[in-house]
Amino acid sequence: MEQYVIKGGTPLKGEVEISGAKNAALAILAAAIMTDETVTVTNLPDVRDINVLLQSIEGIGAIVKRESRNSVKINGGTIRSVTVDYEYIKKIRASYYLLGALLGRFNEAEVALPGGCDIGTRPIDQHIKGFKALGAEVVIEHGMIKTKAEHLVGSHIYMDVVSVGATINIMLAAALAEGSTIIENAAKEPHVVDVANMLNSMGANIKGAGTDVIRIKGVEKLHKTEYSVIPDQIEAGTFMFAAAATNGNVLVKNVIPKHLEAITAKLLEIGCTIEEYDDAVRVIGTRDLRSTQVKTLPYPGYPTDMQPQIAVTLAISKGTSIVTESIFENRFKYVAELARMGANIKVEGNTAIIDGVEQLTGAEISAPDLRAGAALVIAALTAKGFTTIDDIVYIQRGYENFEGKLTSLGACIEKVTSEKEIQKFKLKVG
Ligand code: UD1
Image (cartoon, rainbow, N blue to C red):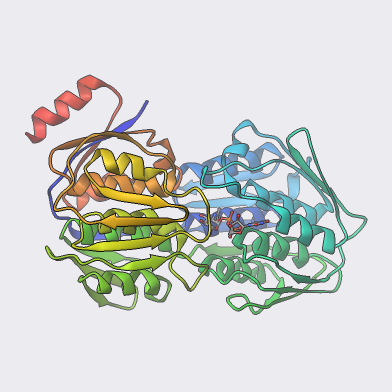
């Protein structure tokens, strides 16, 4: 089992290049199979979730050619099955995008029920509601979601909750439906816009992505495109908090600063200095981090995927902070791990009350999920002494070469597989 071993206490300094957005790329890869022509996707992050999705796309007969670490060519002309039951697909949340993509193209799809991070119950009723509104039947049987339509017909759909996944899934299916679809109360996240842009570059007719109302005029067919995925807002935010928490000075490159505004606002509130450039932001930390209050909300609010990272930073900021999680009900599992490092956090319902401490101390901990795992790495980078983190497979699902990028910023971190390697690391860094 791979683990991280980390010696804390070094301020992060230097420049880091952000990869393509995992959550955008997952939907974009699903969209790529909606034509029988070849689609090229660049700025693709080389992370586990992406590789699993590519394997399952290959598994239904598409031709997948990895041109380089960050670019792939996909040809869906050879797809011979609409059933995706690949063993690993259940592990990734975004497997459900294959439902929308296959339903749109073939009027039929069967996909193993999605898993993903255990951060709550994560219902898919809004996806199902959308498919049904487009004229499809949907049943869940033997762990599979099965959906089928005579033909898809555009519809007026009001989303009961703001859901990124359901918005994108309906957009995928409706792109090839007959007539117009209107999605009201749509999610506005940057990756919703990116997927709409990508589909439009394939010949779709989607307007309003990035607002509450998305209008889709179905087209006959989609065609080839070459598309570059937007930078990963959450990876960027994670490095920004890593810089802040370690009292560092980091230029985070290849980002869209507009997408980071909610994160930047909080960093300013707690006392950091931020410099914004066209496609980069510099975060300069301070010894005197201050407390704040934050509530996770759909975009443009503060992202739930950045909740553990700010909580870890507030755990070493002066005063009492309040973090409220309003999107997922089970997103504080990392608090028990942080407590073992000396943090003073009380969770009541969906709220964490954090009393900042002077410094955390290294401990043996585990990553409970993807973003919490990354946040615990930040905690370890600030802590006195050594920390080992188990279950880093979660982190690898969504962060490309995390340890490599952190090392380039001066962090003392190594991926290890045995106690012997941990001892060797400790001897090396002293
Ligand atoms: C996506 C992201 C995830 C991020 C989340 C919120 C991917 C692969 N994952 O997840 O990293 O944390 O957006 O920004 O892109 N809900 C329902 N019914 C549904 C769908 C959702 O009630 O049918 C609820 C969820 O339980 C949650 C809220 O809506 O409370 C938002 O979920 P949603 O935006 O759908 O999250 P995901 O698309 O699963």
